[in-house]
Image (cartoon, rainbow, N blue to C red):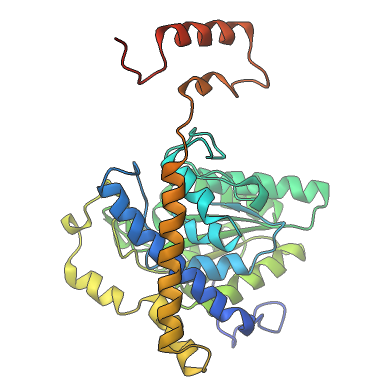
Length: 359
């Protein structure tokens, strides 16, 4: 069953959960910072200074609105495009750039490809490339929380393409049967790489797929940060009340390529992108803030300039940080190195570190 996330359809609680207005400017600052990171990282990858990047421009309001509706103790299971969620959870910008560069300060120690970060302190699980795997992981973690009587929810972020994956159907079915405290947050950005949404399913919406598994599906304008917040806050309330999961379809648009390995000009028109950019969530939020007197052009300029300076400083520090020792590949296989690993490490050290040129 498709439900509206508008105040006229408040859900089971009877009263819509409104976005805290005092946080709107901070949410805009986060959105601007995320957009600046996106622009810079696309450029850095083209320069060969980072190896890979998956942009999120156009999806900032959906991600930030969802993240702010969560509690710090909730667990996030991202795909590989949730950098704004990480920022909203309090992940330091420097930590993100350390991972993108893969230097010795990277908390994952270079064990993952760029843009596949994870941060234990923020309950932000490491992303993985296979489509949809985080969905079943989020359900499993929610079941564990149920059994331990931990009052938390898990949220899985994924794109429209993931609704065609096995994990989507298995995860939603399990969640429905066991009424897990899980929020399924689908960012329908209209394209699964080069496959348009209309060629993925005959369903009128992706949210209506929840009906088959016995819980609500909600369609929300993903450009409206406050509407997203209300939908996720209500889903969280339902989950903690024992009412089970919710599938939220945030309708957004991916402005840029699927990743830096993709050329979107091969499968979509400039006119389509131009039309989508006219609904830019940052411009929408800025207009709302200006109209309410919370923002003016001078302050907006300061926010953008501060974000650019912050990003430049963080990347410069990350790029200057020493690289990982290649011999660290023998560490962390087990809690402590085995004699066999010590032997292999010594042999590699005698031969030379990987990447070294021997005379």
